Image (cartoon, rainbow, N blue to C red; front, side, top):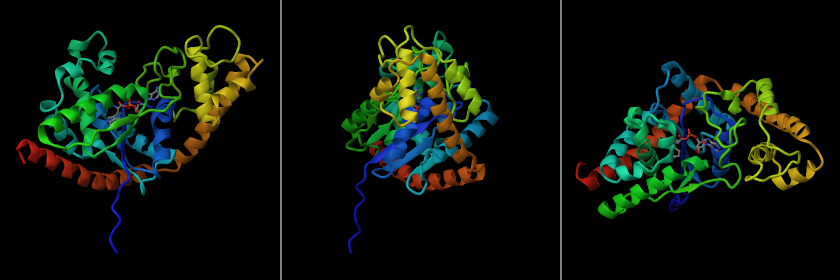
Length: 333
Ligand code: TYM
């Protein structure tokens, strides 16, 4: 009998091991991935070469690489179905990034990247070249695997669009080498905001960790963080991103982690105050974290290491094939 040809679309995404993963990363990225595993061929990376675009402590970096792998597994990424691997284990990523630096990426594109502007702040001149070039490495990650869909939070949309532009430019010159990828972003929860300042994204590299709920936070610490979260003026529980951004952010967290609909929550809290709402939200967050951490604690570092090794073997075969095509197309292979 003829073997059935695999036609599932390919998904690629990744997270930097640059801090403690928080519920923003979970909601914006990981929660989307888990649901995609049945329908698509999924590849999820621990993007450690991205993490070193800002200085990392070697011991912490090593710990975070395994921690993220265990978080992927605890969240429900199944290594039998999906590929999980460490980016730096596959040199094709940095090799393709170099080619794309030369053929595809332009300084004018990189100068538009808002994340570089945010991260480098006033010290752009002293930022590393790696931080500036980081979107090109991200394009290489995506383009190596014939990726069609990139599930990310909203802050990564501009980078995925750059990957599309780079791929199109390269294809125009050298033929149909790259599949043109597309970002997929959740409707609610694409950008979870800080608990203390609703104009700022919840970020794992924030120096004040009271802004974030980390997935591995101590349960009682997490409860206190929710109780201390800022709310807006007024007393009604309403979803209104313009006028009540802090409350709308808390409602989004409640709805997603508690598996509820926002309009229904608003109805249920009619006539109740912020205090009641936050107490219930803290219970929802605590329940979610307890459940998550129970699963996390059952996974050993050795398990995570094995998953990364098996993932490397599967990913590197795909990556090597694409790199060979690229090398041949440009005349070096
Ligand atoms: P990183 O490590 O900053 O974030 C990982 C994922 O979490 C999402 N995210 C959020 N979503 C909602 N609300 C938030 N507050 C929030 N904070 C972060 C991010 O959008 C991301 O999806 N450059 C990427 C990693 C990367 C990558 C790739 C992603 C490297 N190569 C290839 C996709 C494909 C990054 O720094 O994500």
